[in-house]
Image (cartoon, rainbow, N blue to C red; front, top):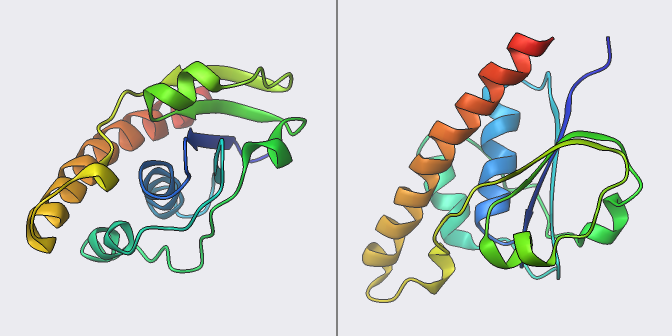
Length: 142
């Protein structure tokens, strides 16, 4: 049986979608093929990498990518993790289910670095809950 494939989408593919990709890859033990992309590519936010590493998740090899490269690829799930990406998301003709998770943008956090890191942690923790739920559903359908 082929591995399930999941694509996480966000506007800049710099924080939320990157964290979701890394968390699902780590929590599935690699048994799910997971990608992330944005409507535009930028860079992976250092604070996103830091808060993932607090959980033992290494996302340092991930890069920011645009969604165009994935349009024609088959995915079991396409998940938007920000409202702007949900609104701008094109149709993925080879996608199974499409979901939307409305999450705050941690890259807009202000204050000291520690205050910003706290916002990244909140988003990371919410993503962890949602990723684990998605993983349970994928495993149940296998």
